[in-house]
Length: 264
Image (cartoon, rainbow, N blue to C red; front, side, top):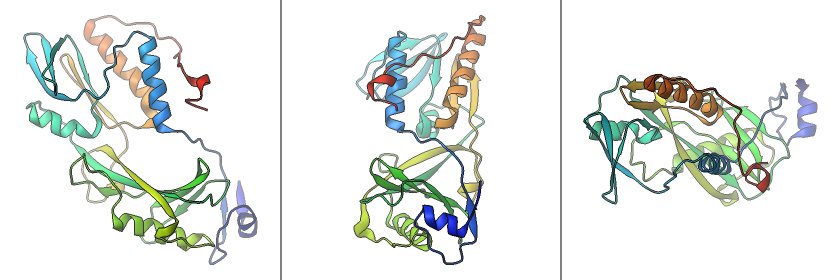
């Protein structure tokens, strides 16, 4: 729905400077950690054996199986492996000399968590310098500001917002909002890495689509994101079925924990 500048200012604390108008739309908000916990709990309820904090050191093809070695020194053999290690894919494949036609670019996105709640509705705004969009969202009684998009070239054990990214988000927030913020208004920061398929000088130019690559009884998943994880999981299941030569009848997904406060 189109809105005039006056209508926008009445609803959100935007500055009137050069504001011509905007629009409103509905979207969804999710707690990613809670969603992941629900998916894991649902898998366990269906009979999956889940082992958290168990780092895979190597994948080795032996006879017709794959041998998985963990950091504790334990080895297990599997007749099929779905490799969904996310941003660690390049390293795992290279260290185990597994060839692939795909390669990931790791793009970091950082966020600010402010001390105060700025508005009761979210705002999607555009950075004038690089034409990227960023958001200012109500989040658990506070405000979430994000996100950046820069190539991540350091260790995946050290993913955090840099000073430059914090300055970037503060400057863009202050361009649009009536009450500017400083470092003192930032309660905390966090960052994540997007595993994007392909290469480009501009991170925004890299596509967000995932790729599935099956090599015998090894299926590698490149990319993927929260909004498509359900459809991706269905395609993965189909690839596994095709390998074993039979197709199962899909049924509606059953999620546990939804009514226990894990997901609203």
